[in-house]
Length: 67
Image (tube, rainbow, N blue to C red; front, side, top):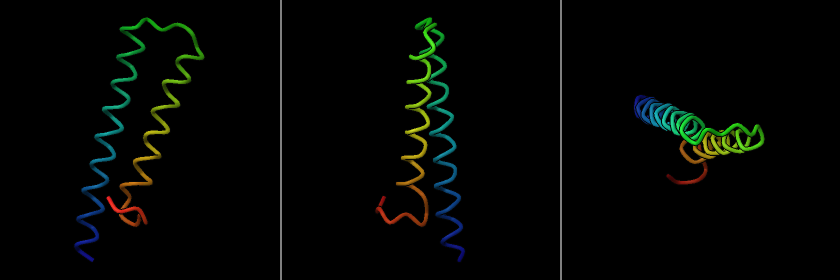
């Protein structure tokens, strides 16, 4: 049980760091690129959401896909 918790918290920390980095990069691209078009912003945020759910699928402790 302890091993499961250690793996769970390590992967949880990885997901949080990855999500924060992705959000920071998206905000940086929008800010520096001076992107005003809403559809482009939706695409950028959609990629962030897709990446987050992809990481959850791959790196969750009970994932069927080996990490």
